[in-house]
Amino acid sequence: MDACASAPIQVGQKVPDFTIDTYEPSKGDFGQVSLAEQRKNGRWTLLFFYPADFTFV
Image 1: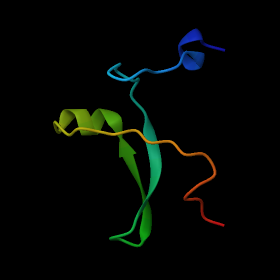
Image 2 (image 1 turned 90 degrees about the horizontal axis):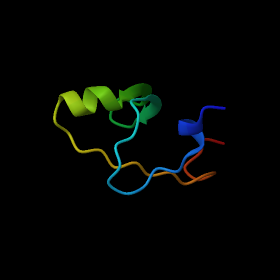
Image 3 (image 1 turned 90 degrees about the vertical axis):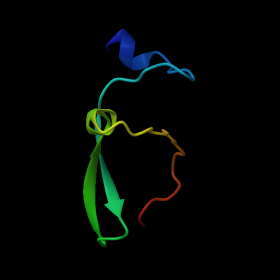
Image 4 (image 1 turned 135 degrees about the vertical axis):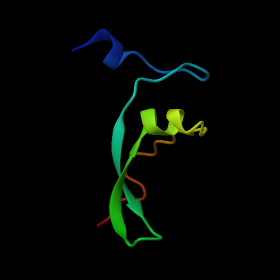
C-alpha cells in the first residue's frame, strides 16, 4: 500500500486530485465531481465523510 494513501489528511493540507460519483438532485440523476475541475474553476471544496449515512438502500 502506498504510504500516502494510508496517511491521514489534516485541516489545511492539500489533498490529491480525485473524481467521485455523485447524485445530482436537480437532474434526478448521477454525475461526477472532479477536485481538479473545482480547483481550475477557483471553487472552494469541503470534504465531508460520514460512513454509512446518506446511502441509497
